[in-house]
Length: 131
Image 1 (spheres, rainbow, N blue to C red):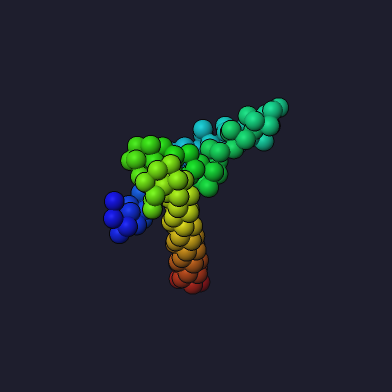
Image 2: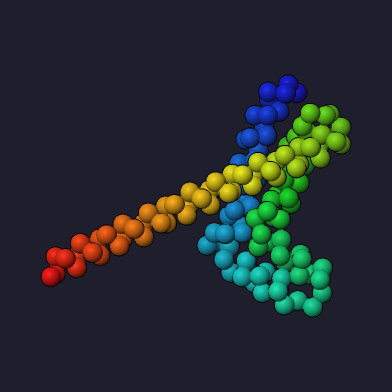
């Protein structure tokens, strides 16, 4: 595969990896299972089970497993056409997916801040109208 195509695949494959990792570890739809996993990751008796449950609460950790699934599904290799290409692809995809998730988190934080500021201004305007 041409290097340009490999780079395009890198940027494109990291998007669904980031999306799946973020959704499972942050969004409301998985809140109950995530809270259950959080409880077990803190309170289980054995280290191995605590770590296994923790991976469903951390987007970075979970992105490793999602990446492995995508490498198997898509047979994507980076730079080298053997097992080393899978390793390079895996860590590169994890890196890119986590950049995407960090940018998304910053964007959500900025939007949330803006909503709070708008609500504050609206409340001030409403209180001035009542005075």
